[in-house]
Image (cartoon, rainbow, N blue to C red; front, side, top):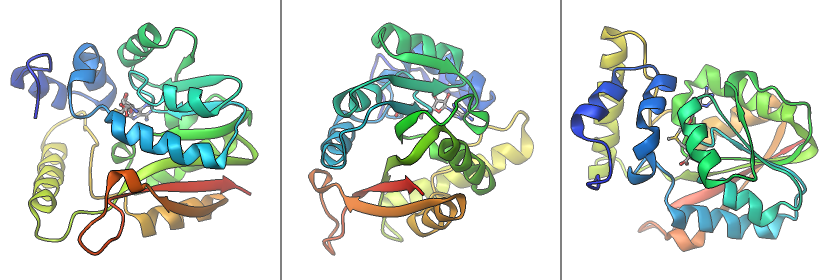
Length: 236
Ligand SMILES: C[S@@+](CC[C@H](N)C(=O)[O-])C[C@H]1O[C@@H](n2cnc3c(N)ncnc32)[C@H](O)[C@@H]1O
């Protein structure tokens, strides 16, 4: 799963016993060599789908990390491209890779933006927000979007019940819950708290109109449903 350029087991353990912010500060220099960085094929699929929905003027990557999503924004946004993250070291890596992007250090639960963005994206970060925090997060993104603006993010289909991936994610979330019961500060990262029906309800309650599109290049499941969808939430 990890390459020789990635973190050692010892480094990962230290990160996992830290807060989310400090954990990512520690992981930042090696983050792009881990499977936690959103893979290029997902980014390409999202960029392709957004092309059909655009063009957009300004774009924001929420929880941008080292900046994996910034080229997606760059490909569909004519004006300013920005990223926001609370880890200073992840942002430093993003700054090195994307010197022309506007990068802002802030908590996504308290975004420091007026409603200036036409598009917001987010990749691989929603597991860091428990359901109640997801409502706050969506409200913050809603407030940063212009009227009619779009929040878009990929959402993988849940693995079939009983499959190897199902049990792996179940084991991960269970271990994380145990860790967070026994250890402070908590490291919130759960894979099974972000499902389409719940997410849709939370987005609608926040003032978004929600649709979703299949991302066909990411393949289908045995029943022909997509492996991954793009959730498209428009600010009404
Ligand atoms: C798994 S990484 C994903 C990074 C990048 N979007 C990608 O796909 O490669 C999650 C990122 O979310 C950031 N993050 C988590 N909780 C956050 C919060 N409350 N406010 C801002 N950033 C947050 C972390 O610092 C980290 O950079």
